[in-house]
Image (cartoon, rainbow, N blue to C red; front, side, top):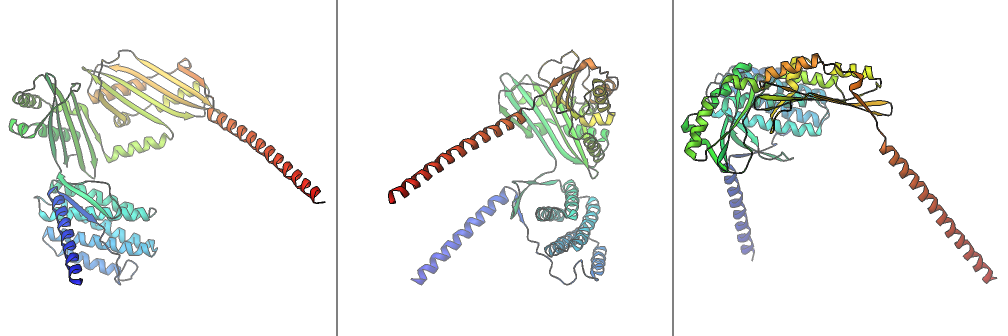
Length: 491
C-alpha cells in the first residue's frame, strides 16, 4: 500500500514538473521574462552604519577600475548596485533611515557610473541585455520598497535614476523590456520588443485604402532639426520594406490625411513617435505598395518640422511653473486643421475673488499673456473632420457664487496656415493684442443647490425625529396604563 502511494506521489510530482516546464517554454517562446524580488536584506558586518563602510566602497571601486573588459565591469557595477539595495533593505527594516539613505546614495552612484559605461558601448553585446534585465529588477524591488516606505526620498531618486539607465540600455541593445501586465507583490512579467518599431497598415474601405505608417525609436539627437531628419530617414522605406511590413485589413472608416510627430527628451535621449496617415484610391496590394512608396518618398523634412511637438526636461519644468502659477485653473489651446486652414480654440477656466467687471477683464488678460514657448508647450494640434469656421468668437461666462467668481473663457479664431511654428506665432500675436471689455462678460448668479438639499435633508430628519419621539411617548403611556391596571386587579 505504501509503495502504491509513493508511486502516485512521484507521478503527480512528475506531471506538475512537466506542466511547469511547458508553461515556462510557452513564455520563453513568447519572449516573456518573469522576474521577482530575490534580493535578501544584507546580513554582513560592514553595513552603511559601520566605520569601515567607506573603506569597503573604496575596495569595490578599486576592483571595478582594474576590470578592463567593459562587459565584466558593467556586471560588477550591477552586482554592487544590487548589494546597495540589500543594505538599504536591512537598514529600513531596523528603521535606520539615515543609514538607508547612505546605501541608496551608493546605489545612485553605481547607476551614474553604469550610464557612462553603457554610453561607450558601440556594438550590441549579450552582456548588455543581461545587465538591462538586472536593472529592471532593481526598479521592481525599489518600487516595492517605495510602497512600504513612501516617505524615504532616497528610494524615489534611486528609482528615477534606474529608469534613466533603462533608456541608455534600450538605446544600445535595441531592445525594450515591455511590461506584459501590471506588477504585483511577487513578480513582474516582461516581454522583449524591438526598441525601434516601424508599422505599415492599410485599411481597405469600399474602393479606397486608409494608410498608416508609424515609427517609434530612441535617438541621441535632441535638436529639432536633427530629430526631424531622423524621422524622415525612417520614413524612407523601399518597396521591399513596405511589402514585408504591410498589414492589410478590411474595415469601414473615414479617410483623412494627417501627419503627427512628437519627441520627449529625457536624460539627453529622445523618445520619438511619428505617424503618417493618408488615403489611397486603390485596393490592390501592388498598387497600395506603390502608392505608399510614392507618398513616403515625397515627404519633406519641412512637413515634419511643421507638426513636430518636442517635450524636454526644460519644457516640463516650464509646464510645472505654469501649473504652480495657475492653481485651481485649467488652460487649453487647441488647433484643428482642415484643408490648409486651422481653427484655434483657447479655453481658460479659473476661480477669482474679484467681482468687478474691469478687474475681472484685466485678470483674464494677465492670464492669457503667454510667452511663445508657453504656447508651444500647451498647444495641441489635431485634424478636424469638417471645414474650419471663419468666424471669430469670444465667450466669457462669470458664475458668481458665495462672493467668488468662476470664470469660463473661450476664444475661437481661424488661421490660413497649418504649420506649427506659424500657428504658435499667430496665437501669440492674437493673445498679445486681445482686448476685453466689461460688455464681453456674461454674469450669472449660481444657486447653491447642494446647500439647499442639505438643509431640506436636515429638516426632514428633524421632522422624522419628532414623529419618532411622539410614537415613543404614546408607547410609554400605554405601558404605564397597563401596569396601573395590573396593580388594581391584584388589589
